[in-house]
Amino acid sequence: MLKTLTKVAATAVLLATPFAAWAGGHQEFTIRATANSNENDEDYDGLVVFKNYVESASNGRIGVELFIGTQLCSNGAECLEGVAEGSIDVYISTSGGAAGIFPYVQVLDLPYLMSDDRVAEAVLQGDFTRKMRDMALETSDGAIRLMTIGNTGGWRNFANTQRRLASPADFEGLKIRTVVADLPQILVQELGASATPIPWPELFTSFQTGVVDGSKNGITDIMGMKFPDAGLQYLTLDGHAYMGALWWMSNENFMAMPEDLRRVVVDGFSQLQQATFASPKRKSIQAYADFVAGGGDLYVPTPEEKAVFAEAAAPVQEWFRGNVDGGDEILDALIAAVGDAETALAEDYAKDLN
Image (cartoon, rainbow, N blue to C red; front, side):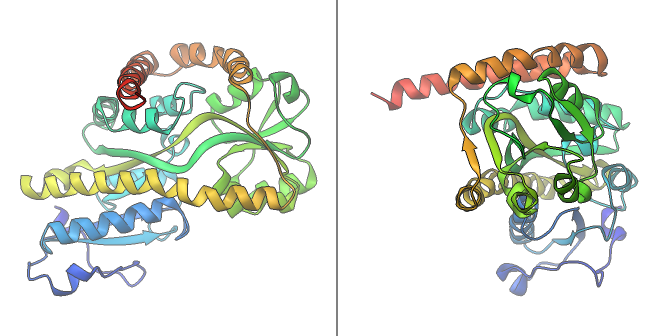
């Protein structure tokens, strides 16, 4: 059970909250949460908010230990195995990091389905996430629970070392770095470039040596990794995919808590989600300014140019439906959720603009 799983570890990042320092409640449960990132990342921002809220709202009955980096596990498969076994309570992954177990989560990587932050955030706060949760619980035989989907880095855009990308024709001859997954590789190929899987730690050197010419990343990752110093000087803000962060929890350990504490944890993940929605927006301001100040070419496609990109990438959706288990089901759910969000947003604009 959750209360017997953990003791305070020397390697944990223990962030004392003001409330926790004087809370009189007796700690009954400990949540061990890990993120394979660093303290400059949106994931860390979200976990700090989560820890503070859960410890405070539970009156000290729940303690949260944060492990930032690879102390508990080093990759998606290993970390999710720990969640399934209950040795790790909370883990955050990208869709690529979880696709080996839950292939349908790659729906978040399908290009040009969500147009902006308001649409994406409405979709991820609604029944679409609950649908994916149900599918993940079924796939994992009830072991792994999707708690929420936040953001980790804003939007994926195409960046490269060679030239401005204003149309699919500009991709011809380029080698674009992808993760080792079919969907992003097919997307790059449909746009006319060559997909080249490269491990993330090797990407800087790969830009320098010409092993790859470009990548599909958010601006905070680009600047955080100092990729412009390796020659990455062209960035097209096509916003082809929202960089979703999937927050997983051991279902057994979650359900071991009484309902009042499960409510606290659910509310904590809502707070975390809001923090990760906001963090990339703030951090991207300086990141974009630094990119341009360093001589970078920042290009915003016109709506017409973006429509051409979307048309060229459309076959990726058909591939997803035909090749991914659960692809039809989850893509239909996403398309419906996007439609509902856009309709609600249009109604809000009608009220707010007049």
